[in-house]
Image 1 (cartoon, rainbow, N blue to C red):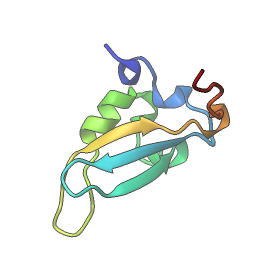
Image 2: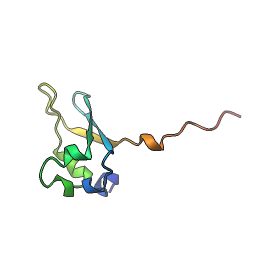
Image 3: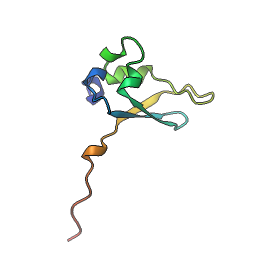
Length: 83
């Protein structure tokens, strides 16, 4: 089990973006909760199910995506150094 199998689409914040990277062509796409919920019934899906159903729409690609969660609000600079 991983984080994708524990979070449903409805649990995401409205402004939360998910990073989708095509494993075949490397195309990078950002999607929001509203984009996922456009399809009926997708609000109840877990993120791993959304990832499995997603396909790249790049020209002639149809590759699978790898999903990552964007957390820009929680990023912090490196604090430390070499002693």
